[in-house]
Image (tube, rainbow, N blue to C red; front, top):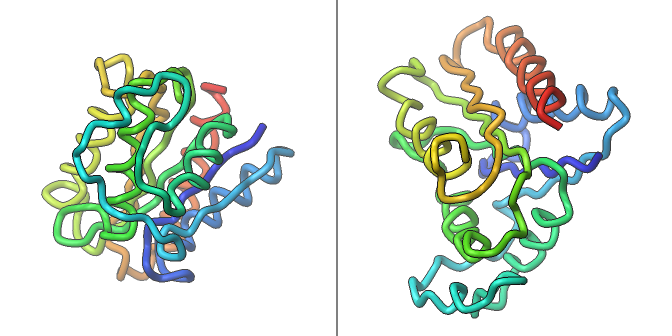
Length: 187
């Protein structure tokens, strides 16, 4: 199986990248393929809200021509998608936000239907009152059992909080194991 991981952190080797690497290692150990996108390395413009994409049913109909078309292609060809981001001011990073906004171009197509999606979040504070808004956003976007905007299956939103604590790495490995197990139980 092909799993697309999308790193939304501006830090290539920061806390979020570390946890995502743990997940990727688990997936590779199971014999699956990983394709990683670093959102910070892509030129992805913000959505214009023109709704031109709604006119196209069998392809991404976005009128903007930038690196998002490479992302669309990888999202469509993947069996599962893991979106990883740290929390900045109670929200996803500015590197990942345009990518998610532009994913709207796939919402009215069947191109992501049935795919498994997982969110991987890191934050310096507690999960509650810090990452809870992003967790709810992932449910609204990707959990079709809750009538989400995409007809995808949400494996879950996995949060590794207190990223400056000494036990961060050990907790990150536990959460990475859980995410990998949950992805495989759905696929």
